[in-house]
Length: 412
Ligand code: NAD
Image (cartoon, rainbow, N blue to C red; front, top):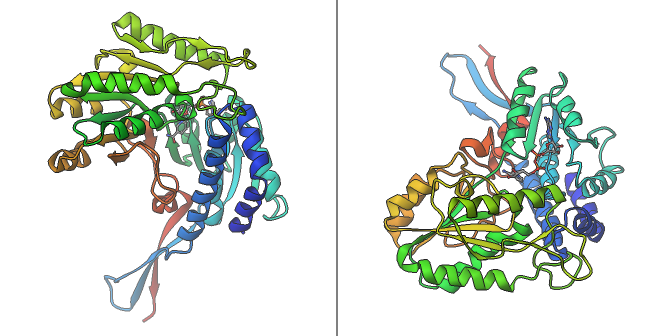
């Protein structure tokens, strides 16, 4: 059933990708990649749902058989943001369906078109009512998550909204899975191939114009590499083509809306007033033929200190801050000294350094020697203020989308 639904999405893939470019703004190639990832994750969930669930546990009493069973949780409310208009909705709809739930999806009011096409694909494939779509903003979302008939709330979005939803869902004691923001660091400690490292960091920082929860937004560099890293990041940022997402060769589209572009610009201005040094970017752009779009130049800020707000708060735009460190322990302390804990990347060939990062880095996802793109079948989520509850997709999703039942069978 869900496999057929995914195939239907793939058949309408170009329509979905074009809708994403029109509403969200990312380049067409990225929109196609987003759809492919959405379908890949959904197919992985189909496979996970075929794995054994539950357990047979030895009984403490003679004449008993003990079973741990799982059932669908019930009605799932899914609330999604604007940056991945098909991947995030499918990251909730697919696990909900494969584990036997009904799901009511409320996509972002800024990017509902892709979810509407997905719901249309499901119309003839799923039993009536199993997937429902509601369109609206915060008021609609709030009504949905606080409804007494909702058994589970899965939300992706900002920390502030996540806190409100935590509160709203508590009136009904609904189970929660919150995927929130990030302030993701890349630590460049030592690297045999600085060019490849900087390519990876640039990709992880500026894809989707930095509007990814897993975007790299802080770069911590061992002091010996500080100059070459700044030069390399600046030259790479300058080569990125900022344009209408439908234009061939566009590597960055616009910000999702004007208010968000202004927020990004304000954060850069704040960073400069705090003492950061502008290496490149730092201004809005008006590409020829797309003058009315909310474009912002890829921006690199140097000499950033760990206590500055640009180094601690999510910017969610094409901006990276760069700061040097002398000792790996200092770098690790800076990585961990933020409220967020979503993802982090380390570039190093030193085994002891890598092992320490795996043990001590306070993020839900950890990448060694590459950027921050996750696999389709791995648990996805964060700790600290970046997430609450079971991770979405991967093996962990079963914990949110099903309930657990301990059964005691007396047979003698
Ligand atoms: P947002 O929190 O403003 O809105 C997200 C969704 O919540 C929208 O559908 C919105 O209508 C709805 N909403 C708003 N107020 C609500 C309320 N009181 N009750 C119920 N629903 C409500 O987020 P955004 O601006 O759309 O997205 C950007 C944020 O999302 C960033 O902070 C980013 O880091 C985060 N994000 C996190 C992940 C992740 O997996 N961790 C992924 C993508 C985006």
